[in-house]
Image (cartoon, rainbow, N blue to C red; front, top):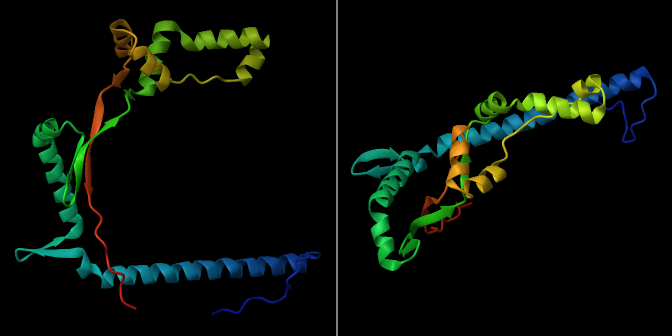
Length: 205
């Protein structure tokens, strides 16, 4: 380990260029020590990962399968089953989820979502109504000089909240939004796939 430069004491009072140079010297040492310590920690983590790769593999009928691949396969299989058969089971119970011995499976309602390409929507609005020109005129009126108006830029943006509100008002509003490339997805839901927690023993030592 490179020893710490000891030119400066605890109280840092830099007066001369020599003091500044000493401070730079010690600052470089501090940063080097930090980088060295972080590199050592990362090396230990990588070594632990390599030593424990066997723990991340499960043997299924004489085949070695990584736990990551098995996790993805189980999740995909459960999603497929939900899409085909969950609705029938939920209809029998009148609930949104089923509690089984080893977890919960069901559906969760999601809020309405606005789907659009903001740039395309703003381009459509600009083409239709000259929005940018209108904003420039408003700035000129408010500030009294085109030079000042050019200093301040107002950036139009799509209001997701307003789009949702307009979508719910009428079919005519929906058609207008669609013509601009805005669609609001309603009655959305996602699958709930939550295995029960399994207690994991802490490693010995």
